[in-house]
Length: 199
Image (cartoon, rainbow, N blue to C red; front, side, top):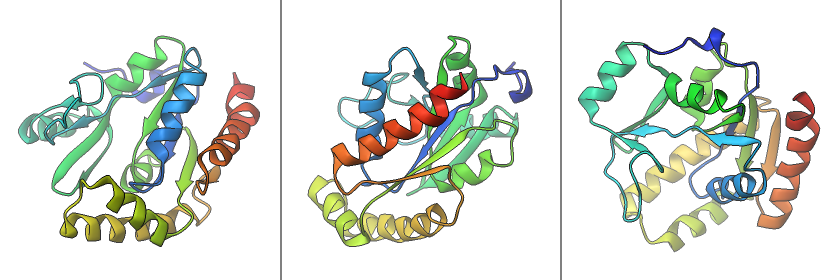
């Protein structure tokens, strides 16, 4: 039903990874706006409920636990992870859809996903978005006012583990997001030297 990774286009995908609150989504949005003809976003599947304003098939493919587990067993996913009780994953179909348009596929995934992708033949470039500190990350997450005390503590625990992995030579580029404009310059410089140069 789905094309295998080995039959995909040779355009190397781009993986963006970073803790919740690192500013990854903001940087990703700016990158997609600046280079709409270069990149296509791989829309992830999730079993969590849509948040206000989220549209199925645009922000996520919203699905059930049963359907997603079956698709995983059928080999339809490149990577998948469970976070705060909800499943997330990148399907082969989502990546193929972008590549068939002749664009570089962007994957927004967590460290669990990165580890799984490294065991495939997808061969992407890896970028880690790093907050200046855990204290700053806590401030950003608290300011959202979307977290319970329990979920905040869980996110910070996961973030600490992700920061360890993100700084252990597992990524092609580490962007330190202490200032959004400065961080975007770092990301854009990497894209111009490594991503666009490969095309």
